[in-house]
Length: 245
Image (cartoon, rainbow, N blue to C red; front, side, top):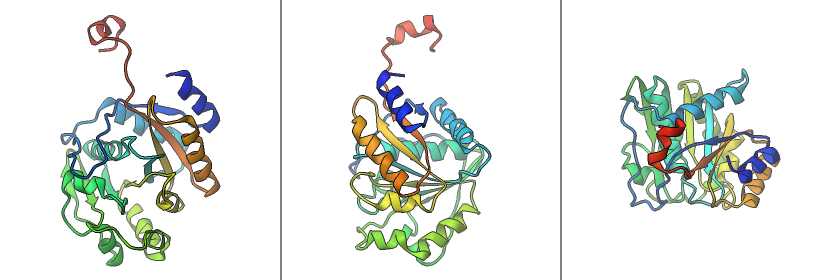
């Protein structure tokens, strides 16, 4: 772990999670990478273990995933993490809560009732068998919602999150960047925790600190930082000699 992220760890008092996730571009036309049912990459398994440690006996079942400025690969991280949890036997609900770009929904061409519809009708989306578990995905509306702040502040959204929390092992929300919109902060007040996604060697230290301070002031529980797209300085042909295969 670089000194850069060690310094962030000390300031945030949150242990960064090293993850070899490769982010995709945030443009809706880009198809996101998907795991095969039952696939549990080492990075995702480590993330699940760290969350259990951070829970310290409490329940962390509803989690918001968000980057600081955008482009950190948060959507790829939360999608693959949801599929990894489902593949290991969990019942997981994944929500595209980015009402501005719908990057998750567009990237994997999700069908069915969107977030506005399921909240308004108090629906629980249809689950799909995924490996040993189940995965449900709620897409974002195809057209940008005109009053996003009011939607995430509404009693209907809060009640829906609470209901789904009791029906699934995990409810994961893909949110827009923390420093540009209030959406993720509003969701964080209703959820058990927030996982901030940063991109190694790209996300400014000040951006992460501002995002953390913003979440803390809003009463959110920052449970972890995923350091995305870490480059391994050891060449592939040498890794077997240092036990890294």
